[in-house]
Image (tube, rainbow, N blue to C red; front, side):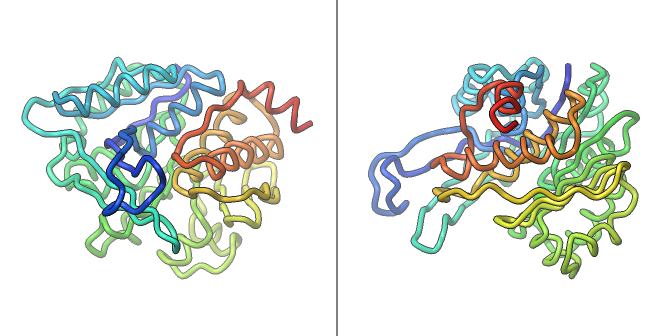
Length: 299
């Protein structure tokens, strides 16, 4: 197993024709979750990627499992919960951007425990990936996230701040989790919201313990602070259809390059390539060729 990703995946409900949620009569059902997005994209890039979480024993949970299997994700570690449901969220496209409405309280994934984490990581993946979303789901899920970032071995952490999930302690908890990880992904804008940092260098001054810190500055650039120095790569210019999922795609591209032992410029370019394909897509996923083909295309 190259990568084990852990976190909640919900069923996303979105208008089929791209209209407003309250006016469109036909809808698409798709899995939506940061960590499963990363797993699916890594599988498309040619890696053995597994996703672990809890789902209800309902048709929505079945839909998620089937879809991730279709993308080549190993879902053998997924726990099915007979007492709690699979969560749902709705996307509402508006002229000012996409609004998202979550219905996830009491979901199966909110009951993830440190016992689950111990069982899942016993399979010794090369790398574990988790995001800050897990820590916001419940008190016990927060402890599970802490157990993940503190486990022996490589851990990748995407800050992935979702303000509507937090009650006010997000800055402290997310900084703690980031400091305990080996690889950290964070948007420059979300870091400014959380901690008041204005530049990538400010973020590095705050998050100073991880070996790798990748600061994404939207359409401008990504900056990687690594043991070999500071590396910058301009973002790929694209026409944005929907920005949801682009951060997950960037993380998948970078992690693919990391797992394959590519140099830092190649990792950043892979991240930008994957993010660009998702930005051009109406969903938070995009079909990607194997990583070697992308590297050959980018030169």
